Length: 130
Image (tube, rainbow, N blue to C red; front, side, top):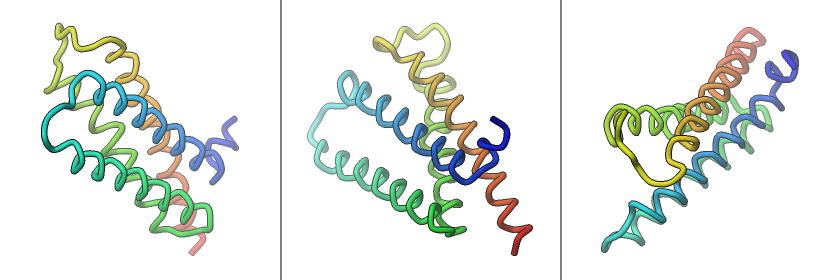
């Protein structure tokens, strides 16, 4: 398991899982929280995030250091950052939130941190190899 976690395949797999947990949480937010006139612009922003993350993973698979860095930034920002912002700002402890908010938030935090750690190991290995 440790070898897989430290491998490029493990880092990319955890990044994919991080993307999927962010999308799951995004669908819940969309269903319960997001409404108004700017839905099209917001949808385009979310599609841009997904496109950037997919591009970064494809680039990382082909050995791109920039792709690894982009995956790391997106995992930290979209998974870890949003989970912490939910816990500390948007819906602090005691807030009821909407159905299934907390399981998705914890999944985002844990899987985002795992992906970030695996990606940092990949970046360190690539730096040592250079």
